[in-house]
Image 1: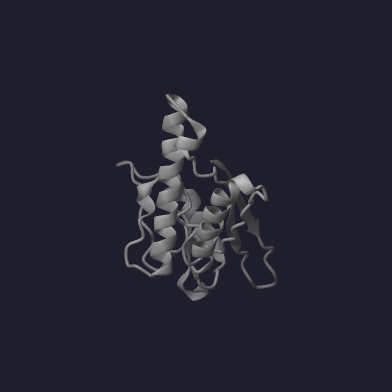
Image 2: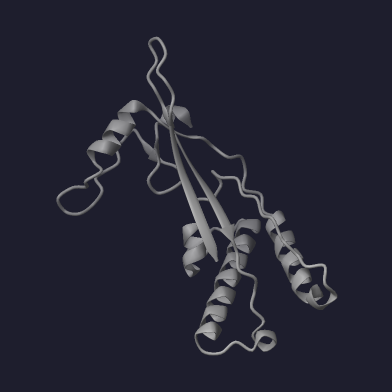
Length: 177
């Protein structure tokens, strides 16, 4: 698989009497390797291990998609590095687009069918409405102040009037919910 993550931060200029807010965003561009038919490719050695890992991560992504579709209480994000990486992008605070590239060749009809069935399952997932990740200047200051972490190695505590939203490092004031 190929993963490109682009993290963005935008700070709005403060107007008269208003404080500036910071918006954070993340764009993941992922090229999923196709499932590897070992009997067809004849892979051996390291290439066989790579093919098995590709199939395993695609299967784990399929499990996450199915759990999201069925609105299960437990979503198995931890079953692969790929799904763990995409956890915040597949959650309810995000939007996700899947594009499928298929082959028109008759000999690839089986692969094309599998790809389209996978995309069809993914299409049935409703993530809900995306939310902005906003933080006030106060929160941004707290984040910068606690960036080094505390002496015991933790990242510091979240202030009582803030809640965690989206990815594991995004704070948002309660009024912005």
